[in-house]
Length: 332
Image (cartoon, rainbow, N blue to C red; front, side, top):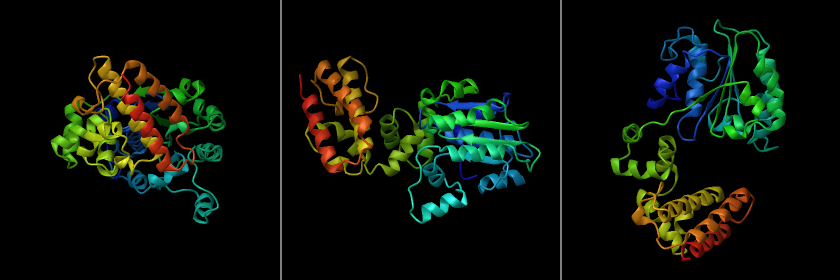
């Protein structure tokens, strides 16, 4: 299966397969594998010869699942996620996108939810039942979520749901109340580092990227390959920003830039309060900024995060944000 299960999720899948219930909400911070755990749970539910540890990966159901054609499985996701994760779109949507009549949706649309409801009412092709996966569940808008409620609460016989999210607080309470909740447990630091090294990172680089992502191993591997930075670049980012330079931010989008500055601000606040930084090394962080200045900067960054997706000129926005950062980082 191309969507491999991470080692720290194997025991969690085994636990979930012993539990009863027709609707599960898998939650936890990003970068731990919510999508992969939900996917493997759905695959095991549909498997013709399941094991206590998951699907057999050899039966016709598993094969259909692997090639994204299992007739008893429905993926309810934003169109952008469907494309990124290589799930097929329905013919009309694909045709509209191919003609560039519109852009793929970033939220889960109500029309897709209605398709799911219709799917739930059709006859299953296998013996195990039918399954729908909703990911990321927080991308359902209120109309979509309310449309799903009745089927989520009283699905047809043999129908199961698995919802997956890294932002459960954004879900409607009525959605959460209709699901049994499972919170992903964090892998140990040693387990995360070993996995990153198994993926080809050196021990030193694995350590840098794991810290850069707040100990989220999946995000760490993504940063290592796609951030456009070397580990050395990452370690000198705070000082680079403090000097007013935007040179290391060229590969960053506006939201990523704001998120980076929030990490620097958070770590500097930790240092002021006598705590260890989370994302950077202590020796790489500027010293001397006052608690008052850093608190004001933090509030300003929260405001910037709310508008970071607006169509600003990226270069000018980054220069403004770095200039602001330099101002607060130098205030005693």
